Length: 221
Picture 1 (cartoon, rainbow, N blue to C red):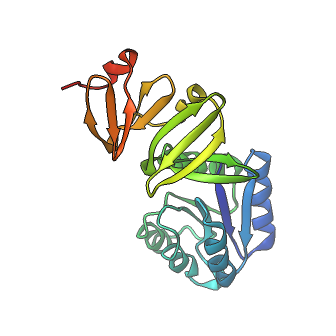
Picture 2 (cartoon, one colour; picture 1 turned 135 degrees about the vertical axis):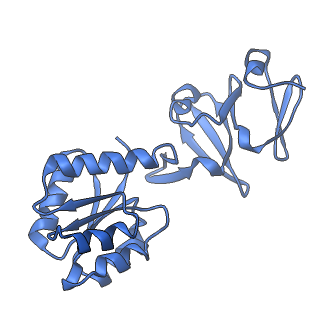
C-alpha cells in the first residue's frame, strides 16, 4: 500500500471519526482530521496531504469547494456530501475532483474511490526512510542512484544527496520506466542523460560507467 497523508475535512465529528476508523482498519496510517475551514487550512499547510476527503457542505455552505481550490496542486480531492441533487453535483464536478461520495459513507465505495485516486498518483513519488523520518522523493527530481553494498546514494536535482539502506534491485522495483540501469551499481533517470558513449553515460555534469551488459538499454551512437 502506498504511504499516503490523508486529510479528512468534515464538520460532523462522528462522521469524521467513522471515516478515520474505516481508513485505519484498511491499513492507512497517516490520517489527519480538521472540523472547520480554519483548521483545514492549517492542516493543509502542516501535513501537505496527498489526498483530501472534503465535506462539500462544510459549515453550512460550499466552503469545501473554496478549500479545494487552496490545496497543494498535487493533492487529490474526494468530495463528501449529504446532498445528491444536480446543482450540488454540478458545483462539485466543476472543480475536477477525483471522486464524489454521498452520505452515509459505505466502506466499499470509500475504498474504491481511494484506490482510483491513488492509482492516478501512482509512480509520481516514493517515500524512503532517512533516519527516523519518511522523506518524499519525486521521481522527476532524481538524477541517478548509486549502490554501495546495502546502501544507496540518491542524487537529486540541486546537488542534494540522500542516502538510504536498501539494495539496488529492490529499489528498482519502485521506479518508473524512464529509469535505466547502466551498471550493476548504477541506475539513471534517462530524462537527464545528455551524452552516451560505448562505456560512459553523462547525467548532467556527472559521468557514470556504462557496462557492456546494460548497453542494450540505450542506442549507442
